[in-house]
Length: 355
Picture (cartoon, rainbow, N blue to C red):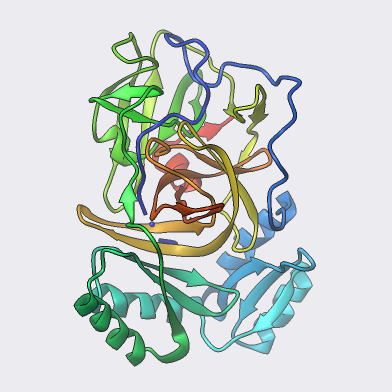
């Protein structure tokens, strides 16, 4: 039960052949963006995280990467589970509350504090539900939120954040549909057919998408899901076979070869057509964001910057696809709040794979 937020409309994979497809360029000689902050997760850690989450069941309480050592730390509720974690090759930490208990806390917030402008998600590094309230939350609503939080004790913490949680939709010049501009996340395939995935609030807006304003269609929507989720899929027209890479906005591209669920503490990058490539780290999973047009669930909260038009963009780490950009409450300096829809959920829903 990993939970969600939303974003503006723009295309993160570079469009070099407008009527053909996205991300068709090849890697250039330009240097990559500045090194990603935080800890890099390995393929082994992604796999171990997924396996232990499944096998620990009610004895697990999430996992994160240690900021000092880079070790995968798995929170558990008893010594037997701790032994299981160590035997698998990760570091164990015994905590008070299981994931199931933290999800129960989220259930209380869902029923008693569902206030537009709030979000909450699990931070395994503190064994808490981390609540955020944006500037649109009134004093009266804030008092209500604090009352509910007080009843939950130290299982929760509240933080006021600048800006307003919003789907980051804007006019501009990336992919166009229904009068909006969006960013594509990743090119994906099913057999010989080629598609791109993007935000559901983008694909809700239009069935046909173009690479230039008023230009020929490059693809047609085949699926969309928003609110609750925030993902959609567009099939390329005319047998286009675009490369499976992400635009780094410096003349080079990042090849994407796998997909995984993000781990709290790991470094990520975001590529979108408005703010280009920005970096950050993962701070919470199972995130719920309450928007005026409905909540989204199972999202991931990060510190990357984003802005209008970045909706649908790519969240990734190295060659691993992690998420589809949904939205944020804005960005102060280099400290942002970009939220992504876990990409593996979308890939499973549509039966497609990155390549």
